[in-house]
Length: 73
Image (cartoon, rainbow, N blue to C red):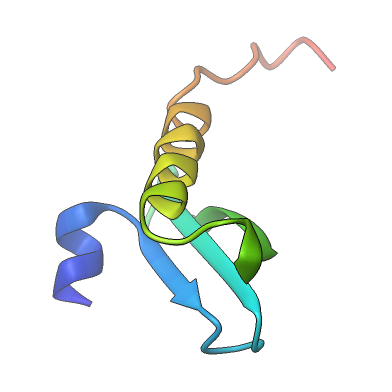
């Protein structure tokens, strides 16, 4: 967990589902109850290591985008 906190991302390399790799980044909420994450998964043969790190960075950029104003749908 310390590594996940330090890097700001978590990887799963077939631990839950054999042949499936996933990466997740936290979504910062307004309270401690907002414990959410943004994740992406793909078949293991579509990349490991650098590909997962790139997906993590893409997710991090998406998670950091400003939210829409409350009056917009």
